[in-house]
Image 1: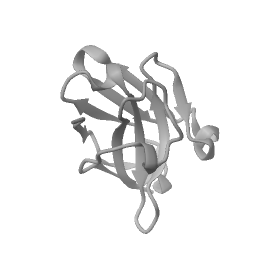
Image 2: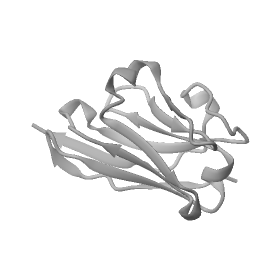
Image 3: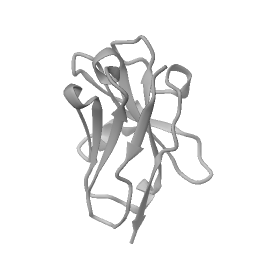
Image 4: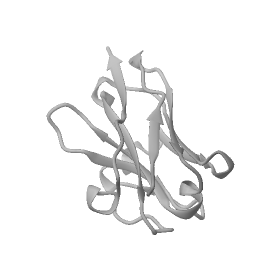
Length: 128
């Protein structure tokens, strides 16, 4: 079963940057689309961006205007997918999760329906 573990969350000030990491147990990023999601307090979990096995990148439509602030990359040798977030805003405060679309080399719609299982997430808090 796919197992991913998020890390790198922190408390930062507005305008700062963070790199989040999503570590697999071996072969996950090379075999599946892996995507980043976030869930702010009181809100539903939303997809941000995914990366397919051929390195094609998919942004959720609602965040395409923000694609300059969110950058996804991966290292297949380390089975790790990264999310770089720049120019952080207070509204970026959320628990950030990564998940794979099992058996899918391309990225489906970035909704919870197609991704899982879900880990503990990593907390990002942005203060003004």
